[in-house]
Image 1 (cartoon, rainbow, N blue to C red):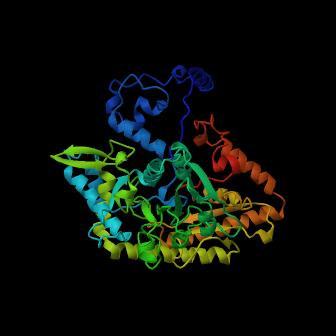
Image 2: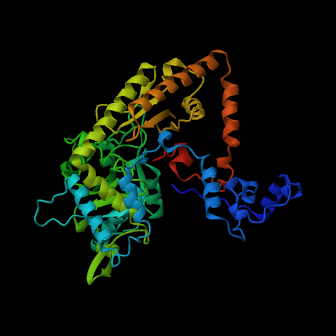
Image 3: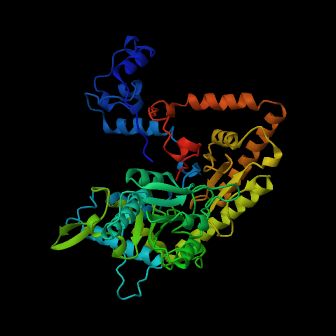
Length: 518
């Protein structure tokens, strides 16, 4: 998600500058006549702070600007060690070259870049077929579009369901002012946003200890005349489990309930078709009307690109579509964004044709093998496994401390220990009604090799043993104080806008659920 930045006031800047030494008062000798020809670190810019609040008056040599920013970015984490994120961190050189060459293309300009527009359509067709769209029906009119990740795709899917429901209600002469949507309380925060932004009431099937996916029976029981649809997740953010879309579908059919299902396949849409092809979750089920997937997760493309596909125009009301004319033909557009680069769409097309089904299958099987190896290893250490293995869920490992051991430290302490070793392995507070359960999660991505996995296993073991020693010597409280101080003094938090930190409208604000990183 994009964080709200806090703009420093002039007074705050002046007060901060009072605490810094006045470098102008130091006798450093006369500067060289031509600073531009000096080495980067011999130029005057190396002795100056980078501009942070206002644009500088003068120019800066390009090689100096590049180096100063590059040096600043070294304080960021290493993407390959960030095991919190599903987002792709590796692509082949040829893919990167194609994407760089497309940086200057404005994807929305169909007239100027018709091939880029056609490449999007090719991707939509391939992805729709991967999701078993009814292409063999000669009357089928499957359609879809690229998006800025799954967040925009979910927004579009929610809008389509809401508008279709409103049209139906108004045609029947009924009130259309109180739409609601049904979903698991472990949904990613973009679902909360979609409901809040578009005035749709959230109706949750809450998790409970031992069940962290939606309960199909409870979900269907919540359906009423104001329900616009049910969200079913193919790979939950926390435990990677696949929700039982088929059971929801069958219950709706059995009870003759006219309620659509939108499948959030952000993470699982490029995994399940290759690792678990017999699982029925997609357009094979009659109540599934739309599906979203993230190309920048297991679609293996750098961020951010997503996709959303609809079974039929019936589920995508015409009043949401705008026609853009290019080369004498109309191009239908349904998007929350307008101008954006073509790079990610072209990157997705490269991966689809470069790897093919065989290539994706090989990668996903390798990820599943590595994930199962890691899962077995953490179980051997005494942790309690919370994710599925053998391809029954995403290639991730969710685990927690065994509550029977009564440790005085928690999963956040282990995460902090691993962070000090360079790993980003997040700890989370689970969705509400799950007994305030805490857990950790490792996402296994394409560039997470077996040897790197072994290194992580070693460090998890060392972190656990170190904390057990502190526990034995009653030193956990001082360590927790150290963690707290380290977090509060972290430079990354200084410019975070805390004006809205007391919000009480989200699941995090109400229940303390951690909005997990995607």
